[in-house]
Image (cartoon, rainbow, N blue to C red):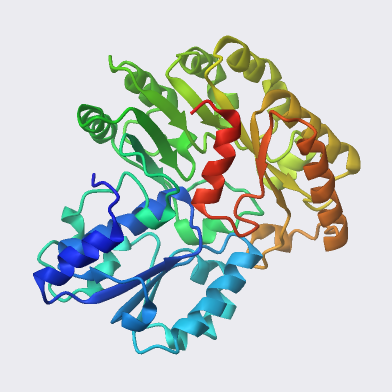
Length: 407
């Protein structure tokens, strides 16, 4: 895996090498997993004597990383696409958005030279004629592009263990773009981790679009606790952060997970719950039983004082009642240290749009969002953000961590 670089120094080096194409890269805050693939694309360009430029007017090619999870990201993408089309550069789009908003994209793709499917990142080779270093030989990235960092820590490394998702969440637009899950073999994950630790890493962030599903698609099938146990079996001091460990997997594996998460090296665990209402969870296509995780969460917090527990909350899903909304707020306040909360957005290309559920109007959803924020802010120990729903860079997100003063 390669380390993030200083774009200015890399561009200078590439320019000195000579004949490389000039690439301008822009993204609208993609998921962590795909931000790292975007970084790998940058590494691919640099390995092939291209220059990464900081002004689209200087570029031969403009590569856009396009997430379509929220309305503002979709609008922002089309605004920027229109702006970029005023330049002479050829435009390439990578990411989920074209599959999430196919109708709107079809009206704008006249500006696009070609699309790189999220599931086929090797399509980036079309930008570089006869690459001397093919995509398959470019190491997976262990961080983002330098532009995404507030403070780059060379000892903090990201390890992607799986991509895609097989869950059936009816509200999730990502399913259209990222495809089915694909787990990396355990030997490769462990080898990468050992290499990073041998290279001086002291913090590992285990990433995946649905990380808890790791191993269920392998032959023979394995489980997330199997992998976690082997990682924690490495006899070295390091901090371990676990991202996107869905509540359904915690429910399934909680007996094994509890013992593993009590290891003092586990300092951050992200368990997205969305709601504690079993009725809503079933409508959402998610596994019920979140409310029964209270003992598990209390045990982790009570017996491992190092661990930050993070979650996600979806506000205003169709038919959500005031009581269900309030119950989830109180649950999060009781058991978590950080919450990303989202007001429900109805994407026409998702299953929930076909279910006939009466949606709440935007005014009510925004009122509940405001109520949630006011409630959360009364707890000085609970960190919050709107996730990707409001424009926020990775650097802004990191600043929230300073309030916890733990990692």
